[in-house]
Amino acid sequence: MNPADPRRLLRAMFDAAVAAAQPALCVPRHLPVPPKGRLVVIGAGKASAAMARAVEDHWHGPLSGLVVTRYGYGVPCERIEIVEAAHPVPDASGEIAAKRMLDMVRGLTSDDLVLCLISGGGSSLLPLALPGLTLEDKQALNRRLLASGASISEMNCVRRHLSAIKGGRLAAACHPARVLNLLLSDVPGDDPVDIASGPTVPDSTTCADALEILRRHEIDVPAQALSILRSGAGETLKQGDPRLPPIETRFIATPQMALEAAAALAREAGLAPCILGDAIEGEAREVAKAMAGIALQVARHGQPLAAPCVLLSGGETTVTLRGRGRGGRNVEFLLSLGIALNGEPGIHALAGDTDGVDGQEEIAGAVLAPDSLARARARGMKPRERLDDNDGHGFFEALGDSVVTGPTLTNVNDFRAIVIAADHGSSERVHRRN
Image 1 (spheres, one colour):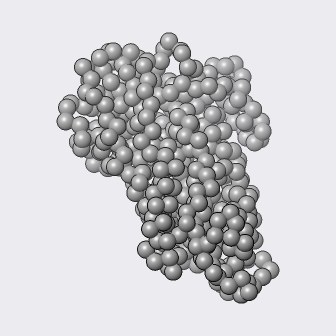
Image 2: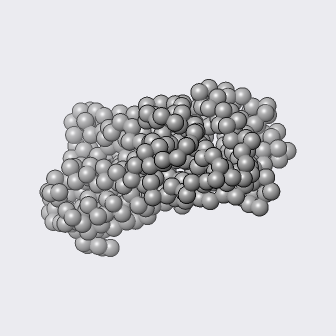
Image 3: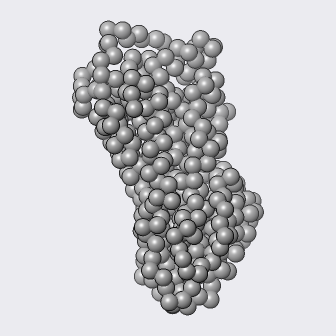
């Protein structure tokens, strides 16, 4: 890969990160020894159908099951039923699938094994509410959580305390059968309880924690939801709860693995990779300012490493929607980064979601070049106004710089790469007003 072509190199690193987390590669080596009894496969998430296909391709004994994935992310299977439902705002298809999944695992024996395939997106795809709440309540809550600026951990804490299937409840329905979780992590820190809101793992958070999150972010919820949380009726299952069966959890792919794959490709291209972190959180525009500062320090002073190099990072930033734009944390990050870099020569960047969907758009992210802001202004766009309006998608679409992948069939969170050329001529810097 030629480092003189930053755009192509950036896209190749993104593709390498996605490829490293493909279920066909990650699932087979984690399959269990056949149980004495039945093998029942269940799961939810954007990668769950591809995970189910990998199980079928490498499991030679009998099995049955049901998994739910996002519309457009289905993969044909013969023995495991694939249901598609809405994400990030849930729909009735997901609700029905969640009910059926609970029914499917009830009545198993201690000789049986439940293989649970969980990946990012499962929270919205299993929207079965506690009694007293409706699907419409869950839809409204999801919209408010998505617009609030709350972190993924905070959002999932609220979701699982209002759910009839999350927070260990699906695992409890499997009792006394053993549960083996194969997790494809899309959350900072790789905490199992935050991946799809932890339907098959115990949860240490409480209803009180959920109430505090709602208060801090000023999120309105239905009166019945508040009643459930205040009364403790939404409490999740904790470690050691006798209702939980034997549970084993394995991570088959994580954001760190994806970043390491991109770093290996960078080395092959002659760039020094620096992984800044795999669990970076915070407001996308503020994280971008910090990373711009690091990139400028590298470009101007060769610290903390010398160019040519690439700064890699993962995690999940947030966007507090205040404008009329479509949001998207990766394009918001990239637009803020461009403003902070102010046309610095020799610095190119890509930010994208490894599942191919940034926010609610069928667009993974975008690429940024030193001339991006100048090209935008030539089209009559004002970068700061677009950022204030949360219109990163509109900004990069107008430049023809969106990254569109289609369904990637995996999900290990956000991928960010900033390529810094060796000697880009600091004397040529042009400072422009934003």
